[in-house]
Image (cartoon, rainbow, N blue to C red; front, side, top):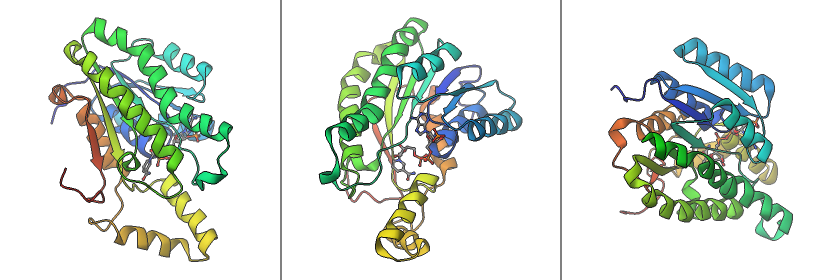
Length: 259
Ligand SMILES: NC(=O)c1ccc[n+]([C@@H]2O[C@H](COP(=O)([O-])OP(=O)(O)OC[C@H]3O[C@@H](n4cnc5c(N)ncnc54)[C@H](OP(=O)(O)O)[C@@H]3O)[C@@H](O)[C@H]2O)c1
């Protein structure tokens, strides 16, 4: 399917590996020029080179922490007028909520709520003036159902979700869509890191923890980053122009509800 976005430009935050990288890759396959981003130089350059080689699109890499004002300025300096913004970031570590102090909580809210809102603030008027915009926030299934040890992450992402619900409607007549993609369990470093931590806690092997998690998913497997990225690219396509303000679960059926 031609997504109709060839020649467009995108900033994909936190995209040197995992879900962000998969979104960048799928957009590049659709002919979108990219800014990719991360804090580890070697990983970032590798990701940028791989996408360039595979797709031939223009890829700039911005080595920066997206949660900081300087990081955001660097992203926007590389691509001042993006047509597409993919908001992604790391997430707070698994932790019992009683261990979180005020600083931890503010950092979590900054990462997963304030940072994406700040970036939206900086790009949305330009998108409106040019008459096209696609904003996708990578959030989590935990916005809809609690995940033990991820309370801070869930709350910050739920805050973002509520915030953009109004913004999406305000800009719906400007050919801008804002949607949230909610990953369940995707096979990335972050997911595997969770099993490693759980293995240390319980003494069970990582493979057993992973197998148990898979068994609880109706699809009986983890998602692949590539399928996540392709869904993101579709949401950024011309075909998805009438979809805005939505929370799209990609979870192999893990969220157990009809609606
Ligand atoms: N995988 C899942 O199943 C799943 C499920 C629910 C929610 N999520 C959420 O989805 C997001 C992506 O997850 P993932 O699984 O793709 O994680 P991942 O494999 O750990 O990749 C995270 C990416 O973000 C970059 N990054 C992290 N913090 C950054 C920062 N402050 N500034 C710039 N880049 C940063 C990392 O590079 P550097 O570390 O080098 O900066 C890396 O490229 C996370 O917020 C995660 O909590 C994932």
